[in-house]
Image 1 (cartoon, one colour):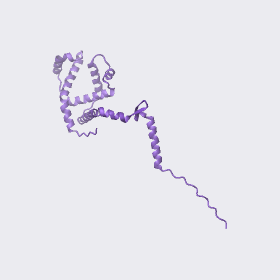
Image 2 (cartoon, helix red, strand yellow):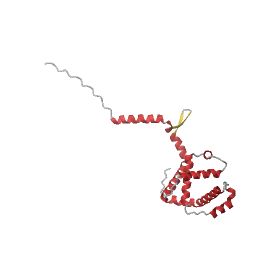
Image 3 (cartoon, one colour):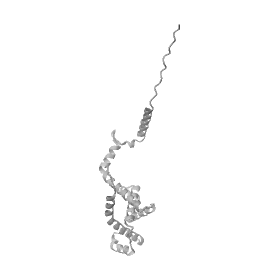
Image 4 (cartoon, helix red, strand yellow):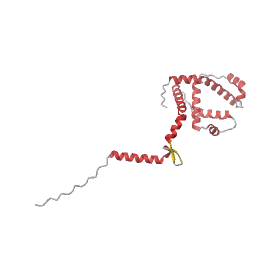
Length: 203
């Protein structure tokens, strides 16, 4: 009787686990992202030695973190109170205030020159103006400035006013009266606002 020839089993390729495939793809994508955006990881390289972004972030937070955080908290509180009171600023109001500030400084300087001296960007400057005007609207809404108030202010403070033309002079005086009024009310108002707020700090 003929012996039946047994064929050796055909090796079956092992299936590569899908989860490992996904992991490799993710790592490759991450590597490509890091190479394409070195600034996200390395802030600078000095004589071949890197300064990592996390190091830069840590130093900035150590030096300026608490001060910056308090400023951001203040802005959040003021913005929240403005929404509650329905106070809204328009780009036109911000633009008008910018022009008033530039004129009040005199000397024919442009806004860009002023910002350069102050070390501010246009966006930072506009945000400060927006914040200032928002506070003025909230704290100055009950203040009635009469023509007599303006006349009296000009008469007693003419030496410190910049404007020379009558209309601009009166506008400057009116703004100065408003600023003084808001300045008196600002700290007690903000302290009360802060005391009522729920603030959790992790820094």
